[in-house]
Amino acid sequence: MEFNELKLKIENLKKETGAIILAHYYTRPEVQELADFLGDSLELSRKAAETDAETIVFCGVHFMAETAAILSPQKRVLIPKLRAGCSLAESITSYEIIKWKEKNPDGLVVSYVNTTADVKSVTDYCVTSANAVRIVEKLPADSKILFLPDHNLGNYIKKVTGREMEIWDGNCCVHQRITAEMVFAKHQEYPEALVLMHPESFCSHDDRILESSFVKIASTSGILRDAAASDCKQFIIATENETLYKLRKDNPNKEFIPVDNRTVCGSMKRVTAESIYEALLYNQYEVKIPQHIQEKAIQPIKRMLEF
Image (cartoon, rainbow, N blue to C red; front, side, top):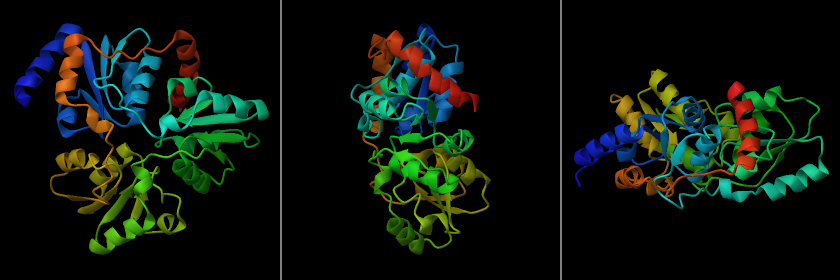
C-alpha cells in the first residue's frame, strides 16, 4: 500500500476511534509524518496526560507507552509493535530498588523516565534529561540519593550539580557509543560546526567535553530548540540519528551531520506506518498497567510534571 493511501486510511481510523498518535523523535520519518504530536520523553508524558483522545497510539519503545498508560488509566493505549524494548529500562528491576531502600530507609530514589512502570512504582521522583539537573538541585541536601538507571546521565548530573549520588550502572546502547574521541574526530572534519549532544552520551560528563567551547549538551527537544535558535549553519548531532530528520525539516538552510552513522535505535525503528494502521484497525497491543502499580507509579511522575 502506498504511503499516501495508508495515511488516509489511518486518518479515517483515527476519527472512528477517537485516537491520537504520539511519536518520539527517534522513530522512522514515515512515523513522524503520521504523528499528531512529536516529542521527547517529557513532552510526550505531558501530552499523554493532557489529551482528551480516547485512544493513544504510542510510537516509541514499551516504557514510553507504559508511562502514557500510567497517566491515563481510563484511556486505551496501543503500542504498534510488540517487543519494542529498551536496554536502559531493562537494566534494573523494582526488586533491586526495594533492597536498596531496605538498607537506606531515608534515602530518595530518583528514576529517569526511561524505566518500567514497575520501577516507577517504587520511585520517589521521576526525571527526564530536560529537567533532571533542576529537580536534583532542589532535593533536600542531607538526603542520600540513588539515581537510576543511566550512569552517563547520572554522572553528568553529579558533575553539573556537585551532588553526591549513588548511580546505577545502566546505559542506552545507542548513546553509550558516543565517545569524546569520536566527537573530537568529527569536529576536526567540520571545525566550524557546533556539537549538540544528549546527556545520555558516554562522554557527556567528560571534562574535555564539558570544557569545550563547541559542545552544548541538551535533551532531544533542547537540541532541536538550540539548532533553531543558533546563528551557526553547521551542526554535529550526538544523539540517535533519526533526530536529523526533524532538524533538517525545520531548518532547511542549515547542515546537520551525525556524529556516527551507527547511533541508531533498532527498537524505535520497529514501528512502521503499516503497524500503526494495523494497531488502529484491529485495536491490538493494548498496554495495561495493574491498578496497584499504576496508583504508585503515577506519584513520581506527577512530582516531575509539577516541576
